[in-house]
Image (cartoon, helix red, strand yellow):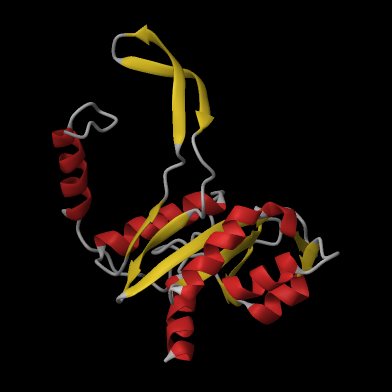
Length: 205
C-alpha cells in the first residue's frame, strides 16, 4: 500500500473527494484581483485547481524527486527533514491533459524589465521539452516579468532555439512579445493560460 504524507491512503482519497466536491464556479469578468502578491507558481497552482474543480483540465505540479537522509522528530506528530539530496534531475514544472492533448510546461520569473536570462533553464529541461515536442505534446513556458506584472505563454520551440544559440545569454522582452501570447492575471482562474493553449491548438489544427 502506498503511504501518503498523512500516513494513510484513506486520507489521500479524502483530500481528492474534498476538492472534487467543491462547487463549480464561474468566472466573473467584472472582478480582477490582479496577482494579489502571489508568486508565479502560486498563481499557476490556483489556476490548476480551478481548472480541475470545473473539469476543464487536469494539470499538476510535478514533485521534486528527493532522497531523505536524516529526519528529526521534535514532536511525535511532526517530522522535520534535516538532510536530503536530489535523486535525479527534475524535468519541467507542470504536466497534464487538456481536451485530449498532453501539456508540459515550465514556469519562470524574472525581475528584469527588458530581458529574460536563459540561464534560468537547465539543459536537461530543454532536452525534455524537445522530447515531448517530438511526441506531439503541447509544450511551452509561462514567463513572468514580476516588476512589470506581465505574463507570457511562450512556445517551447522558441525558447529551445534561443537556448541552443551560441553567445546568446538572454532574450529581450521584445522577442518574448513577438513569440508569445500575453495573458492577464485575474480572479478565476488567477492566470488563464489555457486561453493561450487554445490558440496553440487552433494553429495546430
